[in-house]
Length: 327
Image (tube, rainbow, N blue to C red; front, side):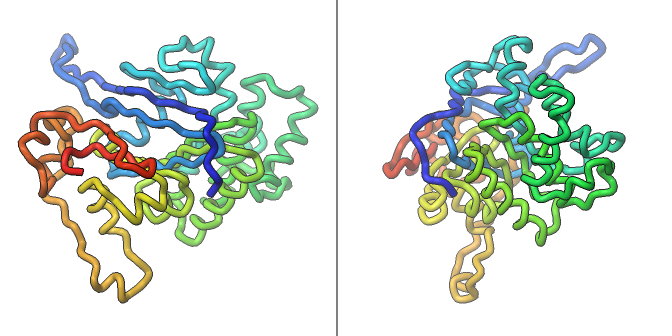
């Protein structure tokens, strides 16, 4: 992990991403799926921010809004001092070369008909960064950077193993020299033995190239290892954000406590005495989120205020922010 810097590279303010629900022959709008519902956070240069939460909480949608694969319903995405949230496509394109993405499925995110050389060089061609004769040496450099043999350039994706395919995806993300990389569950589809190699590679690349990561995952032990700070997401909202060490040693939101209680500790003495917090009920639908705090139907300490009003993130000291009336 890297020491934090004060220069903010990415600032997210009140980000909302609603998907319309249409019904009937006339496709009349009858509601919204509130995938991301008023999210705010910053990522500093050379920092890794981990974004965690259950499946369907809006983590991936947040990442896709940042990359402007989705146009947000409202809010600000300030990248390198420019608000790209509602920027037209022609203005975003020059900025996109400064962003990269590593996707969850290393096979599904690679074109099965293209060679590894074509896949990795694609961002360079799209952004017109190098002349044709310079492409080969740059692709060779990228292969070496991610630990792949350059003799494999003319292979197609099915000739690579899962770990090698993810390395190929990382090489493609690095091609245009981005400053920010959105890592969307980059190791969840890989064998456990390969996961550590990919995490170590990402850390090494960050150290050598000065990269900034948004690391989206649901595996809290991995996030603890790689992240400088961690944001916990529940049903489209950030409920807690703090430094990795602070969050894991002193979780404050009831949802964060429940998540962390499920992470096994490699110490039988500590593990024997730990209390597992079992949450009641199911995650509500983002199409019909609860009024007030989204977590209140499953919370043991909820009060009437939790059922009526939305708790805002507030600083409880030590750069630790929590959205809970009971903290």
